[in-house]
Amino acid sequence: GAGVSQSPRYKVAKRGQDVALRCDPISGHVSLFWYQQALGQGPEFLTYFQNEAQLDKSGLPSDRFFAERPEGSVSTLKIQRTQQEDSAVYLCASSPRTGGGNEQFFGPGTRLTVL
Amino acid sequence: DAKTTQPTSMDCAEGRAANLPCNHSTISGNEYVYWYRQIHSQGPQYIIHGLKNNETNEMASLIITEDRKSSTLILPHATLRDTAVYYCIVSVYNQGGKLIFGQGTELSVKP
Image 1 (spheres, each protein chain N blue to C red):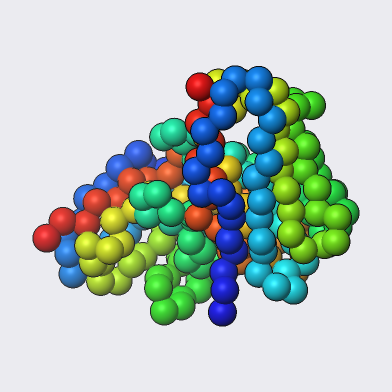
Image 2: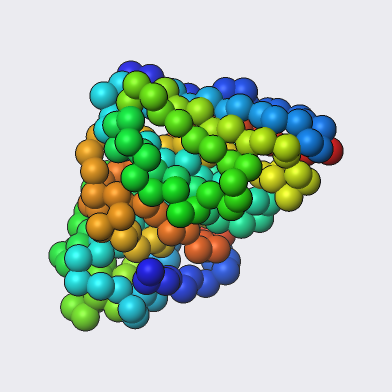
């Protein structure tokens, strides 16, 4: 079956531009996570959805970052007025259930480069 | 949040067992230990997880000490394709299961 897909795979933005990154989770998965991975570092948690509800956004680095999952499936991570420090790989993961003890399935990531 | 410590890098000969250690001395009673790996330019891949007991699946074995303060991931017969960064993670159970990654161990399997 299809895994988690993300688009675009690569995005180059000029500083100050807005970008939107899309995540298509595995069908039927309840939980969806966004992570940010800077070069040479481990992924860092950004936000978590249970169906359409955003239950944890404690990892979003600033109010320029916004995520949504309006119908409980596809999710979009939007970054407004991009800055050079936003350059990273943005990973999406989904899980069939909630809570600990569950495997997360990761997509390939979107590599964002802000010039 | 519990934190983990892992060696920065390890080498292993192809065909031999790779034993990757992890310390998580501040783990809470209902937090799981997860292992993921990340091959270059790919998203992380789940390997195995456990709470208290040792676990085994087709990829690896997970040995958790009785006090749960450390664990070891064992790849029984490492291949070149197992070269990756391996992350030991403690899951914050009551926060939706978000994963807190550290720096991981870069495992190089050599022929």
